[in-house]
Image 1 (cartoon, one colour):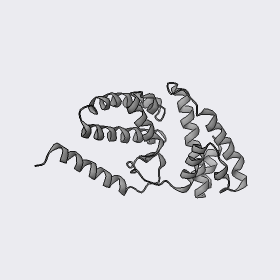
Image 2 (image 1 turned 90 degrees about the vertical axis):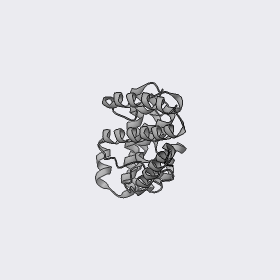
Image 3 (image 1 turned 120 degrees about the horizontal axis):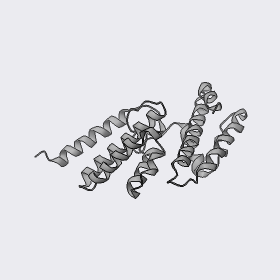
Image 4 (image 1 turned 90 degrees about the horizontal axis):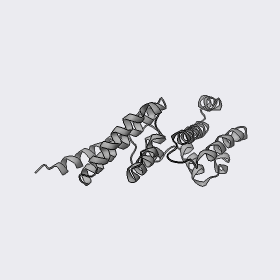
Length: 197
């Protein structure tokens, strides 16, 4: 008998296959990326502000409305919770990507490994030290990398309910990540673009 559970599991399986097929190397598209982590924190705490800093102010209402619906739906049962959560993650990531002017092609599954530059930048942020990143780069970029990293570090202890401060942190985070990504990939144009910020 084809139950609702079978239906839900089939939908999840198909979604995973589609997600796994995506090859776009986009950091914030990952289930283990910062946007999904913020979404999980928001759902766990009931505080939407963890997520709102990752979207433009003009998109706040859309995310707030969805958040309220998801909080209600996820109480129904485990299957509804899983599907509602995934829909929320996908929507927040899509809106975040659109706000950056980037395309959205779906979420990368858990276990997805980002490209080397992005991974190195994330590790540096986690450790609070940029030395390992610098060891892989030409010395002419060291000063700019340190400036971006120090700017990011200076903004990390924001109050979650201060959306302005939170968005300043996200902006610094995005600039740092993309700058390191560009350097590791040898993309001079991307590096120069972020040099102007």
